[in-house]
Image (cartoon, rainbow, N blue to C red; front, side, top):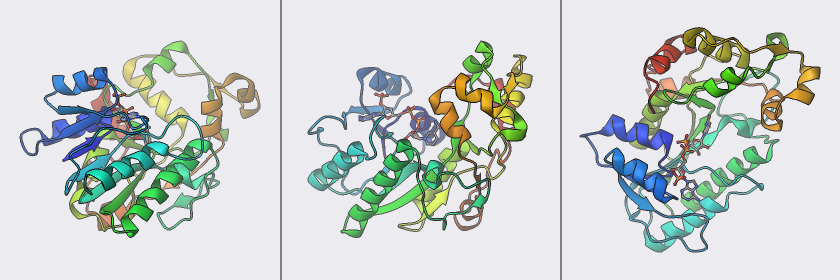
Length: 288
Ligand SMILES: NC(=O)c1ccc[n+]([C@@H]2O[C@H](COP(=O)([O-])OP(=O)(O)OC[C@H]3O[C@@H](n4cnc5c(N)ncnc54)[C@H](OP(=O)(O)O)[C@@H]3O)[C@@H](O)[C@H]2O)c1
């Protein structure tokens, strides 16, 4: 098995598989490779931003593609280069790709399942749509099988917004806040492994916990569990001057992500179906 873009999620996957299946991890940097080696994961360095990335042992492999798209533009040239490498070095048997639920754009708080057409608004969502389309085209043209997981906010040990809470930064008040969705990293790992093992080729699955809430609820729960102050809440009109552009963009999109296909078709039993179940475990073990 090979994880392309073996960062936080990839390392958690390696821990889950320890002793069962050896995992190789592709990273961009020497620091990333050192972090993998410390955890007993065989590192490979390949920068997918380079004009011609080095060969990778992909032929016939089970590949998890977790590398994010670049930070700007509406396309994902990293994915394009990766698929070129597949064509040159040998095609993987199957690729499981982590995309995002941002591809749906604003859904006015409606429940969203995988049959809903994509309607990206932000450039970062367009990049994901581009990556998904490239993967599908590659698969349809005789490449390997592809399974796409659309993922909302990932949280887990070492991945809580503690810094933001410590700074006392405000949030849009709950009555004006959009719906947001989350997944505990270990449930995401379970979804990725299930997608590799028994996902239907070409299928999309929502890897979300199925219990949407608001940013305020998420931050308040973490504040209460860690003893930090709850964030101040401000009206949406005021937030336009005080929140970062990134946070404001999230505030413009409201969706409730349905995970029935993940549970019923893929047979994933979530360990942490609610924040109430998932957050205490993260606070108790803050290491990544
Ligand atoms: N955070 C969220 O809430 C969220 C929500 C939905 C989806 N996602 C997506 O889920 C995926 C996994 O997330 P994560 O938290 O594990 O990410 P992460 O910790 O940031 O790891 C990303 C990995 O990709 C590698 N990478 C980046 N650019 C690369 C390049 N040009 N060539 C080769 N490798 C490259 C990095 O290598 P180095 O270590 O060397 O830098 C790193 O190993 C990402 O695509 C992320 O965008 C995240």
